Image (tube, rainbow over all chains, first blue to last red; front, side, top):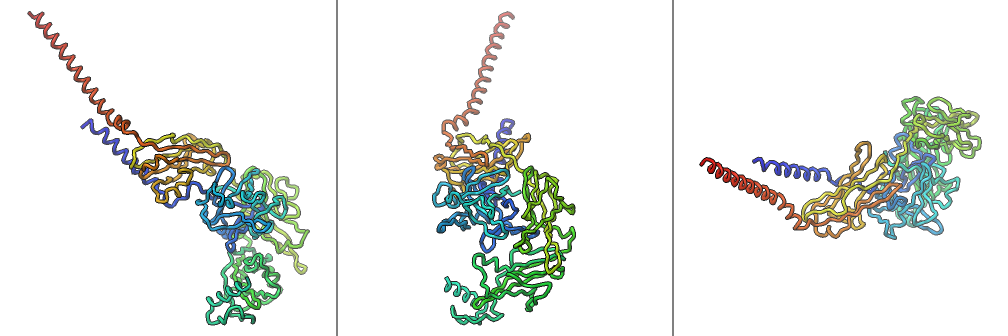
Length: 177
Length: 396
């Protein structure tokens, strides 16, 4: 009898451990470990919101703050990343139109994008940090940066002249607290 | 493009009021009042203070960004559900696609419908205005939320003043922290000349709170104050460190058909877990896409501290382990803005001899102990026998 108690109690604790880990590791209803939500606002304090399926930057007052779009970010390496909104269901991309580059919102799932696929390159942005602010250059359109207009409630777009005083390319990009 | 536009217009007219539908592309008469399509409420509600000038922009002017409204289009406003157009008056008038209210009264609160009409098209959108008393209780509604980073310099903006500053070079913005004016010789707070922005040097925790900015607007010989309120939040910057993956081992032994959990544990020291991402890959693919059936999954992320050092952990869960897992390259990946690291791990089938060894080890121990006891007893009995013999001999 004395001999049996040792292994039996070990077996029970082993079973308990297995059952416990099964219960704790339910994958339902969680965000993928790779995706993270960030708040973004430009150095003139304009936040992003959607107007007719277009991303615009403006000032949100009181209860209007519920319109704010947070950026869902999936990293490719420490500096390159995919950017999306609405839980990663709409992704930002750079598309060439004539001599211009256009910032688009495409209905693709951010977690299905791959850093090694050429066709996903238009969704890739390279971040560069300068003090507390961050700029985003398109990997597919080198030299083109995500920008907002100086004026409020205008579309978020791309510029190849980041020093222009009529556009803002510096953003605060901080994890959602 | 035009045909498509007319077709869509015709289609929407059809869906809204089928009895009015007379045919595609041919209607050129001015649409009657009942034909207007309501396109919904504007996203933003305007929260303003009584006694100040208020400008409500017609929401459609925004919705048609890139396609300007033709000068022939007629723009009218009405309030709430009233069918009556708002009459032009000294206190309320329409100008440049916007409704001016000067000054706003609390009873002006309500829903305003902007109707835009031309020969072939008519639509309506509404925008809500709420006019508050200038008291502390109104601050949560009328304030704009703005954020700056601790220990860095940054700008506050006095927002939504476009109509009052347009074509003016003499705009001077006065800033207040609470109700205290920030004077011009202040070195910490500088009202940026020619703009409506305030520069704050070396932001500290005490700088958080309510700010007020004001400009003066003159109309028909009268001066009005236009104020905006800003609630500043100060965010502390999170410190990052280079993460170190401290487990799992490079090979994990298991038996096929059983379930298995491999935790990936990362040491961050004093660094923040918030900006550090941790995930698993299988042959460089994400776990969710590699195992859509969910046989192999990532467990929930855990963040914890031990002796003031931060750790994060994400387990990889097999339910169950199959033979194909033995040839799969599993990697734990950790990433923040300072570093990108991976640790490869492979699943190995526990060899049969090894498992037999585990099974036999206690058994052989038992045999060894039993054997030992048996030998000891044998030896003891022998010595007793010889001692007995000696006693017998001496007894003789």
